[in-house]
Length: 247
Image 1: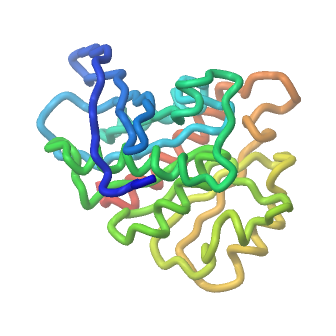
Image 2: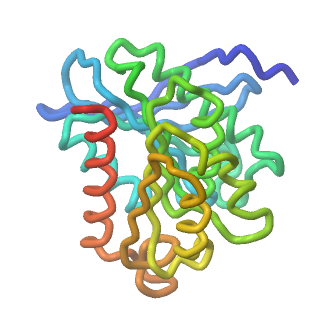
């Protein structure tokens, strides 16, 4: 299947405009012909604005609490966000699964990236790749392959074996561009000592932030994350974006 070049088709969506920002929901069509859903939050005005492209988890979609909180916090500080749901989530809802080799999900994120770079309101030199869980794996692969992406944000990264942190986030210790790794202190899929050990092998610009909670930043299984924890995670993330973009 021919996956390049990336071409974009936009399907009709919902536009909500307030005095503070414009929020839009729409679908993009990937080169393989499947839809992905995008939630676009940006300040009102011509821009250009730094933008965070935020990939979903395998079952933690773009409307989940952490994603919503991040978009609100980033918007309040003058940054735009493109949250998106994978094609398999749009096509199959809760029954969908990511591709075994992750190439479909990489294509999904690259489709959003290509869309962003065509928008006059986007500062194309200030694009940050971000994602939660599965999204962190995909955003790292897209980021590491694209030298024009400014920085990466890895939310609740996946460190356990197999296949292992060094496979999921290849060459992270050698990456010279800034990255933020944010996780809960009791996350069953990423022990903090594993992350510190991996990223600490060589000097780099990786930052690790640990907050309360498990893989969804909740204190107990099947409970929602505390609003204070989500707010803290969002503030840490937005400060990182402000630092790396100089805004």
